[in-house]
Amino acid sequence: MLSLMHIYILIEFLFVMYIISSWQESEKMKIVVRVLLLLYVLFWFCAKFTFEPFNGLYSLTASVSQVILALSAGYVIYGNRE
Image 1 (cartoon, rainbow, N blue to C red):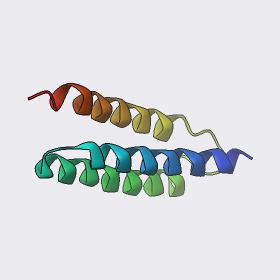
Image 2 (cartoon, one colour):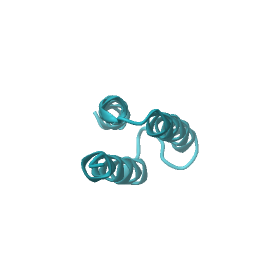
Image 3 (tube, rainbow, N blue to C red):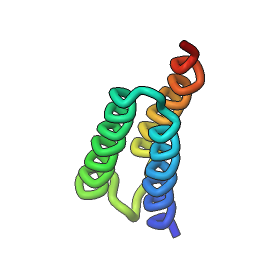
């Protein structure tokens, strides 16, 4: 059951970041959001094979994903007001 939560965090991040990316008006920011998405996926896989295994807690990857999502969503809300 714990391993499903690890995977859920990744899937949730992918879907929400894809939505945030599609809401961006600037092509430059769309690329930045997609690069953040790719970097997080690489970080997630690295974490699962090194310091945060599937049978352990998932606090670091979950925290990092929530910070990235909050900052990205904040930029979409306040950054596209031009």
